[in-house]
Structures are given as C-alpha cells and as structure tokens.
Length: 174
Image (cartoon, rainbow, N blue to C red; front, side, top):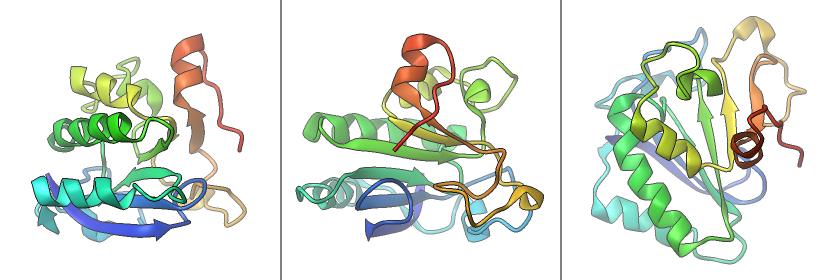
C-alpha cells in the first residue's frame, strides 16, 4: 500500500481536529474527483513501519479527535490489510478516539449485500474498526457546497457501530 498524503491537524475530513491519511489506488475514477492523483496505486510513498508510527504518534495529543482515512479508495483490496493493521493499533492506543473513513463503495457493497470487489473478509474486519463511514461515489451532478462531510447528495454519513448493531442504516448526527 502507498500513502499519497498525510494531513496533520486536519479539520476538513471529519469532526474536530484529526490526522487524515490519504491512501493511493482507486478504480472508481469519479468525474472531477478532488483527488484524482491518488487513483494510481504507485503514487506517493510506501506505507512502512516508520510511516505507521508517525501516523499513530500524531494522534497522541488530547486535542486530536481521531483518524480519517481517505483516498484513493481505502476499500480497494490492495489497501485493506495494511489499513486494518493501522486501525487495530490506533484503537488499541486510543480507544477514546474515533475513525472516519471515506469510500466510494456503499456500505452494502462493502458488506457483500451488493456485488463488489470491495467485499472481503478483511473488509468486514476493517469496517468494524471504523466509527463513521462516508459512503458512495462522488457524483458531480449531485454536488453541493452545503453538504456537511460529503461532496454529493447521494453519499451518506453513517454511524457504523449503531448500523452494525441494529442491522439498519443509522446516519451519523454530530
């Protein structure tokens, strides 16, 4: 897995101040994607032990609310195992902090309720380590600057823990 960018002290990709990790690799190719450079799986730098530790240490201060994972596409198969390792370690160190993830796949695709390349055993474990999922492909025709935490109105901001616990989609309310 490659990391395209890490934004420290980010306030744009989730609630509060966060560390945001942009992974490389995406096959969705959404029209006018804000981060098309990350479509290439080889873009950026390899995710190694030092990078992982830098990400984890950056979340240590009490004023950091959590970690956000974006892309590229976090749920591309090539990214899942390394991200799972990162999120498991993050929750082990910071159980009080949350994880947001932005994916072009819908929750139904990730869970295998709709056919998708994202659905794997690792994807389901990865999902259980995410608190808030912003799902769905970016659709330029549905873009609005009034939307909070998402780019187009088809995308949902899902409370993953409540959704998995109830079996029904529960939207995140901040």
